[in-house]
Amino acid sequence: MPRLDPSHSTSPSVQSNQQFPDRLPGIVLVTGASSGIGWETVLLLARQGVTVFAASRTIGQKLAQVQIDPELHRVIHTVEFDVLDEKSCAAAVSTALDHKGRLDALVHCAGAGLAGSIEEIPLADAIWQYDNLLFGTIRMLRAVLPRMRHQGHGRIILVTSVAAAIPVPFQTYYSSAKAAVHALALGLSDEVRPFGLKITIVAPGDTRTGFTEARKFSGSLTHSPYAERLNRSVSRMARDEQNGMTSRSIAQAIVRELSRKHPKIMVTPGLHNQAMTMAARILPLPLVRWIVRLLYG
Image (cartoon, rainbow, N blue to C red):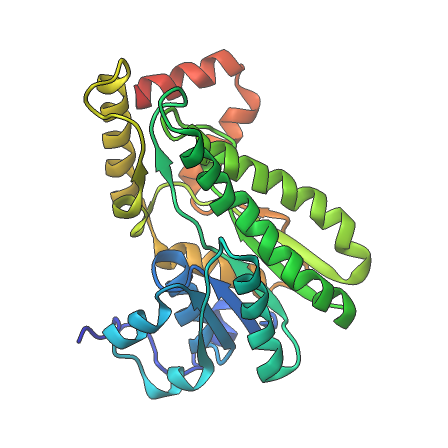
């Protein structure tokens, strides 16, 4: 079985004072935990001695496939859940509460992407995309907010995307769903601040994860009036993602924000992504969209 990168310490507390000078929450629920950003966040938190509830549909399979230090097994608890099921989301939160009596933080990474043209994607698939990203986030928030509000503290990190600010053609439903999560998080932060809850948006750009292979295609990739541009756009997305930032670097940004006493409301990891997001705000909109069309067909 594959081993973890030996360059990373398996001692839960070795790096805590160096990388994360402030205090990390003691009990964290991470969704989308079986791969990519979610998995790296689980490992990084566990190495800091944090009790982590790792939630996904396939988290049990993930832990069976990899070999990790026994000390990490001691602080990682698996929770099988489906973001599309409200009862499953509530049960994931209850599992953490039943074990420890409190939940200090939620890191919501779960989600999947859909590619195709707006015209040709069946409505059922479009609804699935919003259900997965937007309403999945709402299900988790509805499950966790009452308890955090009652206990008087809590951290919530929602992983969105640079595409929320710069929508990508032929991945427009994904982009707009992430934009909706972004707006949801900003409004939520004002609603819950009086109760001691703090919300942070982490918006990665292109990142090397299993997201590329898991992307769902809808509509025709060949017999379509959009076929040439659609295929070019999807190929560009896949290439950029596989040449993008590592999942571990995004996880480090997430855990760094969790450690802050005064966290930022929004974090965009990577100077390139920060520059792109800033340019999208200050450049004329027609110019921004011309650049996007040039890149993505």
